[in-house]
Length: 263
Image: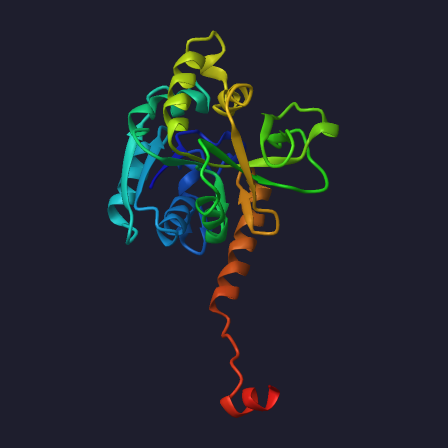
């Protein structure tokens, strides 16, 4: 399985932290930057190839990847020369040559525990599966989703009416089977529109939902976070620190005699 990681943006809402450094290289887990944390989670879940879409600070990202290989996963970069003039639909459109088989898309600012990836990868087969989180309240910046009975996606947009919202897209999805070709074709059509360069690629998913069966998988209760602003960065660092402590905590196993007495 291949993952396409969208990390071409400038991260302007994180200025001045991103004045001279791409957002994906900001440290989020000790000295580990976001990109390394993502690659380690992908490798842990059996994803053996990643293509990092780069733009702003591309040479820094490439130098980091060359100097810090992650065991178990092959990593390449793909440059978007239009990163300063476009939104992520153009970045995803440029990645079409990499969409030659089943693949994942992961936003470069989305951090998550490996269990989130495992849940998506273990979900029933579907042309497209969108990973969603459910919560009590949604704000204007959430990429909100509406479902059409069961787990089928009806719509995805930041502007959905709040009374129709069933969750939010976390920036992680899986394409399999004929969903790969249908998504590539829809990207071609979308980028030709006047608004193409200023659109999010999820607008393509929203359009596809009208004619294509798109499943969702809920990861509610599992940890994830995204880094859009300095406050998010602190939340993500705290979350990853907690997860690491939980992973390292010793598991208590009762002595054999004590276990026998408890039966």
